[in-house]
Image 1 (cartoon, one colour):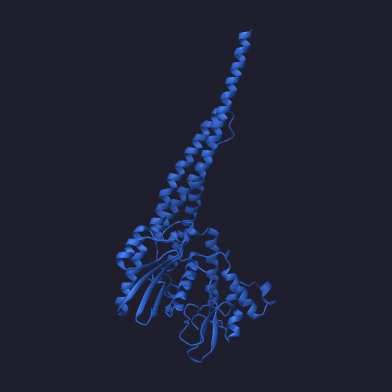
Image 2: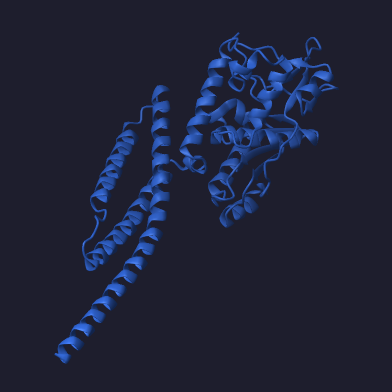
Length: 380
């Protein structure tokens, strides 16, 4: 009888110990699952974001007559594979387990599934970036930010073809009538520069180009905002800066420091080639290729720059600057100011006529005798 009691006690202790060990294993595996989940979530989000960007790009190219059925078929196939993987993942999710041993087994399998998905998504992501390396610049923004920025740009394009004031994009009707014209203009400018405003990578890049251009203008250069005016046909040239016999061909890269993606050597080669082509085409004696970036260049990119004679300026952050262009007409002397979202902003030259300057506020521009540019109809 005594032996039976001791045996039963020992059995219970062993069972409790085993249960505790299993519970500890489950907790460790749950931590492992949590660690495995994080890169999966990040890669899923990035892949979905890049999928959307590529699909929209394909649609734009097709509208322009550049049909890319192979890329479209490829995108659809990737989407199908992604959806199938999600379904399989849902099927493999662990149901409430009855026994601790089953929990351990299923938890291990779930952790392996997440690790396998990470390995599967990495080459998929590399494929996206390899086929369309330009989307790396967009990956610093969330999908919501991209869509919001694209929406704003399309609204501006529509406005430019009408007599509607682009200020209306930033100042809704509910506020419009209660404000004077000057107040509306200033409010729109404040909201345009607001730090939490969603914008596309294109918009953010244009703002950086204008900032660098403003720095050159302050040094006495005449600046042509080539990238902002020509868009995708800019040949990699963002700014053409001239002073006396010196010409600088400048490319600007506004990259996320948090993202940690440096400027690669292909960018250095592009701006070098663009500078040489410009020199040949314009018969200018001396052209200096220049790169500005908010982040840094890779080691190889720096070597390219050194041997190709590309001047590189790293770690130059975007900063607020006076952005209202106060221009004096060469024809009739009219004093006009342009806001950054006005259609002729990038085509407006500052500095050739005495009295032209960049104003910080609408009040500053108007007190100097400048009026807002009339709304301009495209093609008119």
